[in-house]
Amino acid sequence: MQTALALLPDFLLILLGFALRRWLHLGDHFWTGLEKLVYFVLFPALLFNSIARANLAWSEAAPLLGVGLLVMIAGMVLGAAARWLFPISPVSFASQFQCAFRFNTYIGLAVAAKLHGATGIAAMGLLTGAMVPPVNIAAVGMLARHGGVSLWRELARNPLLLATLAGLLWNLSGVAMPVPAGQFLGRLADAAIALGLLAVGAALRLDGKPGGGYGAGAWFLGVKLLALPAAAITLGRLLGLSGIYFDIALIFAALPTASSAYILAQRMGGDGRSVAWLISAGTLTAMVTLPLWLAFGR
Image (cartoon, rainbow, N blue to C red):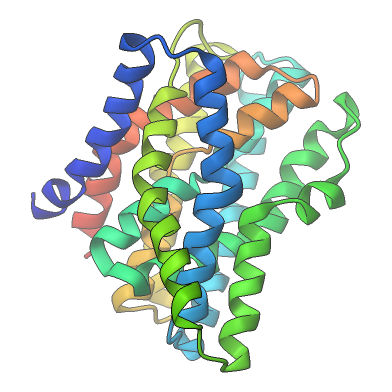
């Protein structure tokens, strides 16, 4: 109960974003601009500032990355099984496949900040940044036959990955952050989580149904929100994760799919409508499952 109450303000921001888009009639251009601001400026500032300043325990961070990678692989394997279990077209399957393992960084950073402050943000930023390449390789590779998006161009232009790498390099250099620079980045970081969660809520849509029917949709949601957190708990305990790093691994595994999955499907000629349904249903369901997993795992 305490965990659910601690996360309630963040989930209320998501619901507020959903309501504001429908109440204020600001138009798609406003919300598209907000998403770009968060994605290209505010969250990179938050990641860089947190990782550059963090005192990371590398002996525990390495198993954390191992758990994260194994969890992603489990999601890919279980997600691929949907192709044989449900009557789903190749294009729709290739689009929805990524919903079994992609993660919403905005929600992950918000939850990590709520539970563990700046140290939680740094650990979550490190994990999500490290998982960007394998996740994009799997998602883009599956959709590659339907479009011409370059995988390496996608990675090279990913601001969250670049901010993570830059923060790590600064952290390893041992150079102190200049006070004005730290204050400037801090101001941007303060706005990142609230606006990011509002943008997540504004993007929710549940019209239509997923390709392959609701059975296929339930499969992808079950893999992402039930099977992967269970795998994270098991692997985390086997690899000796504890404390903050165990929590971060569990949060990461229990996150719903990011809106970038919809953008990728649309850009590569896939089934964007089905992906949008899965993202929205998964985000709303995670408001219940994520606190439950944290309460169970802790």
